[in-house]
Image (cartoon, rainbow, N blue to C red; front, side, top):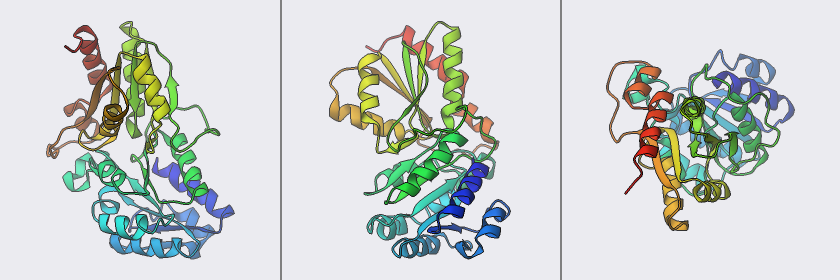
Length: 311
């Protein structure tokens, strides 16, 4: 996803002179094309993410459209106060782009994991929270935030994620989920870089005779409530899938909406990381296996849920 972001922001920067890119001392080679095309609109802010966020706010309040970019915990947890008080309070159109969200940097340990960022950011007023499912969704999301006039957070994986969509998404809208696979038995609501796993889980379920709908919730805030209402009315079993803590993330947002707006309806199962730091040594796929976030784990648990209905 990060390569797609660099390419898309470079293309947009060539046609929109408001676009400014700020980096937290990473992505120097990644943004070579951007720097060559518009060197006066690229700023390496160093390992000073709080300051980078404040600078971006000042730029935004003077008519520019800044994108900040660094590793997920460093542009969220480290500078949460600046995001809340500088960016969101002033409704400054800053776009915070986080690379390596979830467990994408699993091998670097808990300091580089980001399984709480959705919870942090969606609780802040005025913030739009986006978690694209593949590079095509990411490209569309970058264009969509540039077309609006409010703060936004874009949560990326790392690199090499499979493409789910076959090409550009001209009808992409913030707050409008995308149905990727149709099915009548079970509905999987996925956000972020878990979308390929959700699609693979649907394929495994189909082999077991369970027709599974897969929906990409590339926007966590605002939620597509019309899609949620239809899913919880039509299906008896709905599952949320995310690479984020079960506390405060996408699944929590869905559960909150269901609690507030629906009586009865489908059973909800949430897939996500437990309320603990992942301290084992291993890379991304190992972490997913350990936490039950693979297509196989998802399919197996849903098959059990279908055979053992809730009391």
